[in-house]
Image (cartoon, rainbow, N blue to C red; front, top):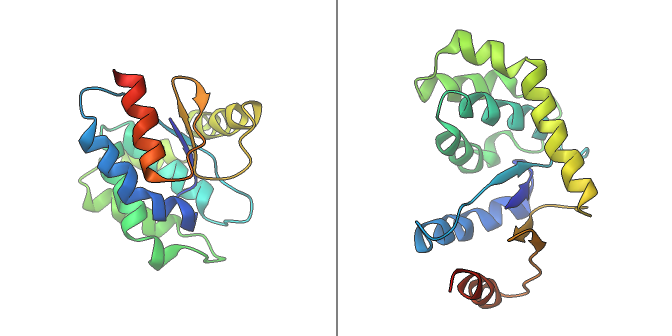
Length: 154
């Protein structure tokens, strides 16, 4: 499980590693993302809402990837990038009426807030923060990360 913020540069740096993990352990692990939008990132909550709205149409992975692939275009902007995120939804072929409804819905806001609160309850203070089998994974190197996962799946 990863607590993440789509506007976080460290999360972007970890993105390719996480994708490698997903490929390497395909069928052996369940990967889960949890939204943890940080206050200092003005569009992280908008991005989380966009990803969750896409998830409701079966396109979570595509929108998740799009956020990281384009972070340099929208990250660290002080004005809302919600319109840009809507173009991503359109590019992904989402039903835009449903996207608009979902992205503005209380249930999407509640999901993002619930993830954030769960993170706080687990001691998350920054992103990315990883958990493996319910325990915080504190690895200083990628090899330590692989070793912990190998031990968990064996």
